[in-house]
Image (tube, rainbow, N blue to C red):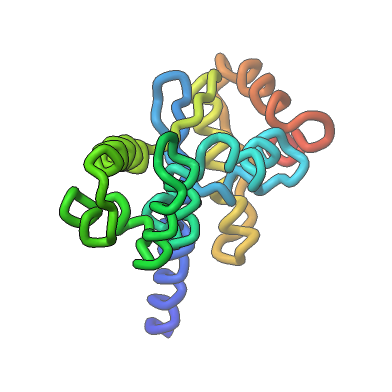
Length: 204
């Protein structure tokens, strides 16, 4: 029915476009910016891409700075406790007042005084560190990919369609079509990210 068709289309669009901030990956592919979901890069479990963006590696690359606004009061307190030259008892104030990550980066001098930070020097240090944290939190983590944007774009487009197929939103996608003068380079990029038998996923 028409209603079911609209529902299917809505589910497809949601699956294609949705994603939490920490699930979206920004890639700088030799100067060309591409954005995709982390789950797209993990379609092939045994690929270099999947390993590069697994939970451990992605955290090491700096996913934390995208999560500042999602910090719990405990995480905020840990950050304060690990900030150089801040007295130990100050971290407890952030727990006591249940300051979240989004509240932390909104704090000003008045707000710090309100939660009980009294020393002028400590307030200045915290404001300086919060300013740095706020700047970091507003920046995307960008991963550099030093390969042909054309070739990597073909791989990424195929992985997107493959992920949607795995989630039952589309038919099995055809293998990427590459222009003749790029075929050798394309195969090299594929074999770099999909070594051994895993390259068959894209090369057939």
